[in-house]
Image 1 (spheres, helix red, strand yellow):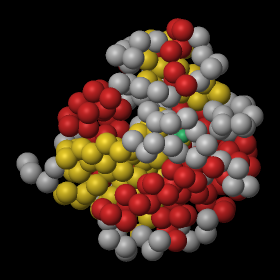
Image 2 (cartoon, helix red, strand yellow; image 1 turned 90 degrees about the vertical axis):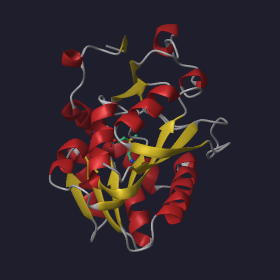
Image 3 (cartoon, helix red, strand yellow; image 1 turned 60 degrees about the horizontal axis):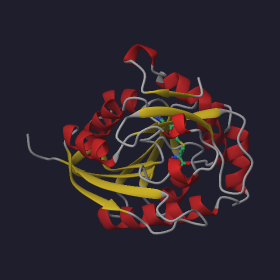
Length: 249
Ligand SMILES: C[S@@+](CC[C@H](N)C(=O)[O-])C[C@H]1O[C@@H](n2cnc3c(N)ncnc32)[C@H](O)[C@@H]1O
């Protein structure tokens, strides 16, 4: 399946499938990140860290939800936050554990991790994760549960109004209709880089859908940041969503 409308729940990829997609790309991604070849990633991390410093005091607890290989987790750790990294890709977490000693990493989904870690975090960072999770509502509810009352989510996504349309390699069917949720399986590739060996899923959801699902998960006071250019990417490739756990019942 290269592209399809959003499938019925029973046909949707599981989180284990998502983890296996990324397991196939660990080597390629590790090479890009350890040689500092992904300028957009560096620039995006700086935006995230700026938001984190604004909203969470140094020393507070931070979850890097969907931490991948742990490169951003390491930066958060170096800023003296008490950070944990969680990802459903076992291969990515193995890399993180082997390369970033002294940081807590766990191979788990955000959803399952939330079951035993309620209200534990002052901040949750989800860098390029929310468009990759098959059930956004469930992921956001788990994030809300993980946050202390009033805690902050800092999430980045490819900008839904521009990302797919800036890619030259997609068919009209893959582009789909902006207002319709749909899944596109794509090779992960950074600008100017080689495609990674494994396809990964991009779940297109319009901005209104993110807004609705954040509120449903009791994540409120939503602020949207549209950095005009992240690294050498196209303008408006990325959107940053900042939202707060509602501390009222
Ligand atoms: C584009 S990668 C980003 C990785 C990382 N945040 C970074 O900054 O390099 C998306 C990651 O999200 C993870 N992911 C997606 N949905 C998840 C979920 N519900 N629970 C845990 N991990 C998830 C994938 O396994 C993948 O490693």
